[in-house]
Amino acid sequence: MVDVILGLQWGDEGKGKIVDYFAPKYDIIARFQGGPNAGHTLYVDGKKMVLHQIPSGIFHQNTINVIGNGVVLDPVTLKRECDAVAAYGIDVKKNLFISERTNIIIPTHRALDKASELAKGESKIGSTLKGIGPAYMDKTGRNALRVGDLLDKNFTSQYIKLRLKHQKLLDNFHFIEDISSWEEEFFEALEFLKTLNVVNCEYFINNQISAGKKVLAEGAQGSMLDIDFGTFPFVTSSNTISAGVCTGLGVSPKQINEVMGVTKAYCTRVGGGPFPSELDDATGEELRKIGNEFGATTGRPRRCGWIDLVALRYACMLNGVTQVIMTKADVLDAFKELKVCTAYNINGKETREVPFQMSRVKIEPVLESFEGWNLDTTQMKDAASLPATMNTYINFINKYIGAPVKYVSNGPGREQIVHV
Image (cartoon, rainbow, N blue to C red; front, side, top):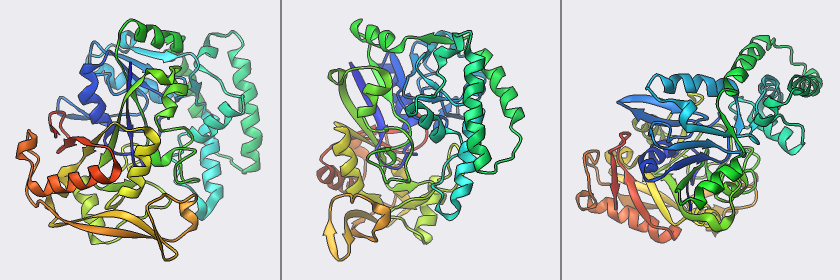
């Protein structure tokens, strides 16, 4: 049995804490897509910890953590994270497993990412410059190096061949930055990667399922950044929706059980791209300030706005969401009035559907107002203590998106979550 936790917006929904909260119920936590452009923030012993590659169940001693074949792996980032996790007494060589089919990000992928983004000028998409896009391009172009290749005696020649291919592209971009220090760090990290558990993951994970083990598949980014169904071209390079679990871990659709979607009580986005409910005013700035809305990976300030129910219902439909977890509800504690986007007005016509190319049309959000609860909810422990106005807000969302909000997160702490 495989349950799924994934984001329903443009990422940054607080999935790390949610995976950490549910992790004790599972035997295996598995990342199925994305790369080090994803930052999952956890609080361990009161200290902030941001994971970019390692699954968020790593701090649970008896939980197996798997990096699946759908992920693109930066060995340098992985080594850095493993060192940080080890400082908490966690033995990653015991409970971290990596698919031999996982694609490797090499230094020239990062260089290509940077060169490509610079060349776009004002049309840049807001890449994190971690080499994600170029790595996935090599995967689909059948040029990639994979973790299993590290054990091949011809790995160095394979690497040189791929690097030379990249160098020709970099020459076309007139990219002259010296990346020799990147390569030195990269090869040191590869030696560390060889010491970890590299497995034939599809057999490994299916054997675990056959043995009755419970798997939680952990998504990165959010559904509206999906390469096929997101706000193209302002998207990531992988399938972030639940369908990506099957191709990213090697499990069949019949194994998928619960699909738990995570959404903020409002909306944020990092980088470029359409954002119909964005608040480019004092209210948006207040959301950013109270919610501490700055990227876990890049530190970039996030764009903020009211919750977009058109996009949220779309994401629930695509993913087959069975239950919703609403995070950062406490950020709305200070607001006397709340609004939600219930439709898009495009060229004078109202619609509740996400258009083909959001960036090509002018979208005016149709907003509905709600009374805020205007009190501190961070200490509330159960559904009965939640204010009536919050329940009204949640119930409206439930009805609109067609999936029930089952949990409300009311603070960053592991214990700050209410089952409603």
